[in-house]
Image (cartoon, rainbow, N blue to C red; front, side, top):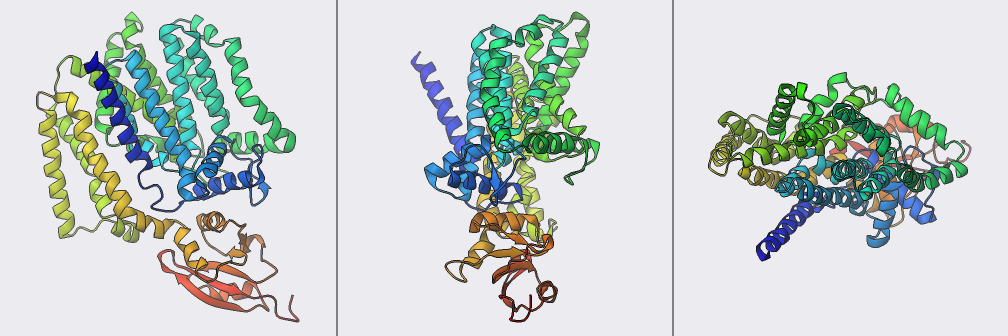
Length: 540
């Protein structure tokens, strides 16, 4: 018993250390990037300043694209730590950690021996690490979605109603994270699994009135309250940002049908090779025994395959595609791998040399662009120089060493350890080497700092022909609404203007009768900033 207790403590310390490093380490090293991060962060700040937990607003106007779960979490983070970009990222990091803990607890109860593998493999994927560090709604949805499916499967194996309660609670929280998709996709997964089991009674028992009432208790109050305050909510949220986003290219995120194939393979890095092997192995086993029906010992694997395929297939049908949409499917792939490793370890099998070498190459390869990220961001390519060749040679040697380690007696038991080493090195390189480059190239934070050096209290800021990432980023870092000339939002008074490098003449044409004075340049993003005066007397 003491040995068992000591091992459990060690496991939890290991998980805590890796989650702390993979999800939290360096989240303040570079500013908010893209359009979504600063926009969501600013919405939470405005809700907190108004003490309004119902209506999300941006620039003081209702912003009804997403439900409030992320905003609520960010508001709590701001109250505890103050408003900052890293505090805006804490909810996603926390949700990812909570999900890893849920994997460990679930696997310890239902697939004993694979709990640490499953938890750490799920944590150490490109998709999980990337979105755990983002101020967005994707990780809150993924966490609630995945915990709902774990709860349902736990109920399937035990028939304990507490798990069914948990299923409906997490579906409700997922619906508060991103809307109806958090209920629709789990329902599709459960229905397909029930069809394969041939036990239709499972579906009738899942549609359990106390659980449905609990789901409504979690979700309905906010949806009713926000609709009461904003009569346009259901039209905006359901028709535009769910149905229209799915069925049209309204929001300019069109991608080919096969888009999520390569995106999924990239999202499960560095485990891609063995996930494909494990998936192929499961498919062959199921096909060989298809006439006998679904065996109880295969149910978990089949459930994971359905869990992986349904979100990818569903969003492949959408005309609007973004990488974050399939984050809820990523853990299914790593849990499938953990089950495959458990089975192979129980049978004392060793990986084939080909699969081991391919896996090792895939795990090591991202280190090369990570170490050269400065050149990659600035030149958009990797230079084939002597240094690059040396790095490729060293990477190949490391991959060979990993291959021989996997081929020793430890076999599959060593897979987690040898793969986490390059993952740790990769994250370290991206955080320490990449953060300054990413900050300058993609965040408005350094631009905001540069503007703040002009004077302690800045006047209104406007933008002209810049990326919306700059507009939303300045809105967050300066905590003010940013006017955009293209929308006719030219401030009546004196203001600062940010526009592309060399655009002073074009800017002056937008504000006839006003003096446009060049103040400086933010060269990493080819932006200039100007002082635009009040209208000169006699001009309007």
